[in-house]
Length: 380
Image (spheres, rainbow, N blue to C red):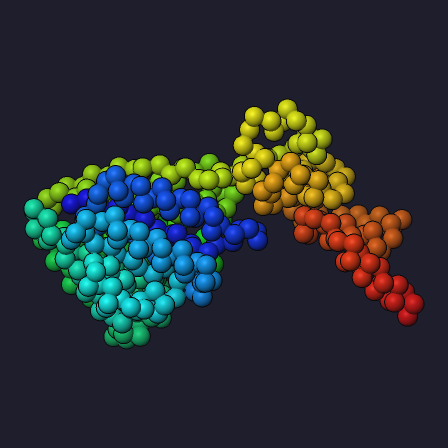
């Protein structure tokens, strides 16, 4: 049996105010081509379908289009499984689930303590597919108050125990949790102190665990437990990452083969660093994709460049972030109090503080408002 594992679509996501819908539309078309090429028996989407629990109308339309196109490309009898993640509303994702199941589209219901497997057959018999939406300890504890559930690990362990998995069969779990030891990126929600950690051992009953939640494709100690990763980069911590679609083939019990299809984005991400003069020199950016791709620029100038982001955007059209790395910012990051130049007026000092905190200067309207406010204070 061949199946495709996807996760963390985050449809409707914005990064620093920039909508990713165009990027998502582009990459989803690649995914559809991969589905057509491999003709899988099953497609698994392991959570975070949307980026927000209440997605925009445009995000819902894109999701509807994607799922419709996936089902068009699946052969008769093939199935699509969609599970909710921590960014989704489990109730909204589950809407219409009973109707869609008649068309071979299975959506995870709101967790109620019972996870019913859905069988998919091949020449070796049945493969049982379980969908466990993102759950917190309080949710699982509500249904099993006789169990000791104090952590995420306890919650997932109990939820799986109550599935009564028949380990003589081939079993697949679609889940959305953080497995201890896995690599996070900056675009994921982090629980303080690692409270959301789940040990990989809780998944021992399954022949493959299709995980979502972390955006970097990776195994979790064993080949049978894997994060597919997000299809797109959503933070600069992912600059060096390569995105892909996971294709898995499961044969008889214990037989698993994985392969990967690379995904090429409409715009890649780059982390650029240097002085303002270096970055605006034509030889630095010509014959590179920097002008159209997403970039984060770190200026190393000791003095702030007036309207730096506005000037740089004439060259680098998709700047998502501008920051400084110099003696001043290093002193701040090291907890050193910077000496205040008392010769500077309050207007100038506030303007510098604003730009340091926001990576861009105040607008003319903001400057005029601040100057007027300072004048009123001094008058009193």
